[in-house]
Amino acid sequence: MPLHWKLVIDCTDPHRQAAFWAAALEYMLEDHGPLVTRLLAAGAVGPDATTEVDGRPAWRTLAAVRHPEDPFDPASDTGLGRRILFQAVPEPKQAKNRLHLDVHPGPGERTATVTRLEALGATVLHHVDQPGGAWTVMQDPEGNEFCVH
Image (cartoon, rainbow, N blue to C red; front, side, top):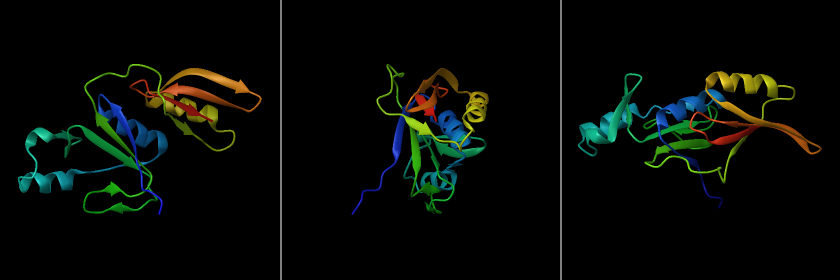
């Protein structure tokens, strides 16, 4: 039986990263507010584990995005399919990523997608044009590399 997985990205600000990637990928930003509220009321977590984001309770060190067409748990809004979890870590990014996302817009849409992602806070590092293909290497707002093909 295949394993279920999610991609976890270490970062400084999980809520900013989740907002960027939700907009970049056109994914759903998970709303853990109802779950956080229930766990706080039950005394299962303390207020130090939470924060407020856009007027809703949220986990202080975690935020996630999910594909809008994939299943999710309605009690927690946690995605059960394609999902990226952002977790706060104390240390900053040190070097080039060993793993990165490739974003594939439709044919002829790379330039428009790069422009849209720049408006969201991404930065172009360089363009690659090789016999095997062309793509743009970018960085998200925290400096994580990704490619637009």
